[in-house]
Image 1: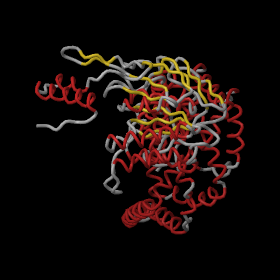
Image 2: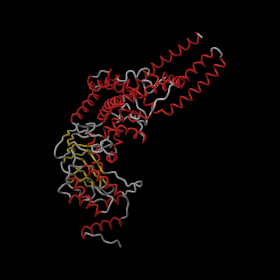
Image 3: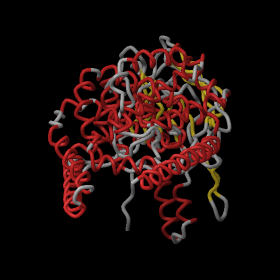
Image 4: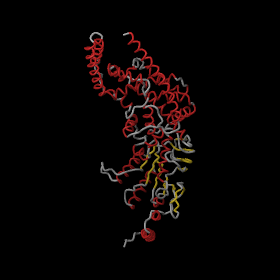
Length: 558
């Protein structure tokens, strides 16, 4: 018996030593990875289910009048932009970052505070890494919104711990019986081991997601306290609040190790504890005692979530700034007349972007052929408007504008499910912008090919009136169109810009540069030749176009 105890202690000691070594090695590798990922795209995997979980916090704070709505978010491929920026280390951080990108800020003071934090995280490398390690120990849960489950605690009722205590007692008695009657004790021990594991997983299956959330909450609390203990003066405003809020949970955190480990990745000690949990149900017992306390203190817990999420988001935004060839902090202002002035603007998802500049306080019509750069330019403007009022970063050399609410009507589709044609989807999309005009903040509006879903006559008649209506309101419109007629009809309200191209003998060449004035080139028919259409088709098409310009009507095809 003494030998058994001796060897058991040796094994435990060896496990502890290995665990310490493994943790140091893991931390060293993690710091190396943090340094490598800073200023680069994080190696994060995304699924549709993942994005649904990311939306939960945002959905709880959504403002239908001020936020980036679903149509605009999808038009601008903002999921791709989010993935580019998301270098957060915690679920709280990535949920908060998603919400931040959808909620433009209208306070200059708040924008400057975000910038202060980003500059600090960029320059104070060692302190930032210490903070990132704490955030990583909070960790991420795949396809599960922590905020959502924190606020679903009312759905759960604590169960009785009596059955768990009886199963533990039975197992202990069975093990003790081995020393009296080895055969009988062994049989009862096997029975209780199987019984306890079976009932453990039966109960755990019903509350598994909440158990994961409880484990996450404990890591959140432990590391919120640890963040305060880092004693970073530049973050005192936030860490003092974290300290005050975590004090509420001091008793709650006692003996919390039975429910979770301090690191997310796990180690040998954690594997050992997993077997203890299966046999003795210590995490299920702890879960029942914790549930009531969490329900009573949910508001404090939400405040901790938001505080951690904000700091983690700001580190991700600082990392995003580092990956950009250049950027600027925007100059945002409130005034009677909306305006936008930007120099050398580019899109971060393009490998070799061509910068463009524009300065306007009037609505803008942009003309040019297909693939010349119209849509990309207005998407880039819209994206920069959103980033300027969320992470206080414009992907340009200078950016000055009013505080805007940003809306777009671009990448629309007809809907089989709702039985709506493309034209119906278009006019509904534009109507939502008209309905939101004339409020406290001006609208920055982007439209690609107004009413392309209907015939030319009615398109020009209707689109010109819709654009004029927007222009007369508190709205700065940027509209891309092929309809040169609009550039004449709308001269009183709209400035004209265009993109152009040059067709050589064997190829079409775009410079993707924005020019003032309306487009004058007509190369659509010539492009047919580059793609191998017969000369008969090309010549007949050119003659028909010339006849229409001369006579004002189309001739019948013979």
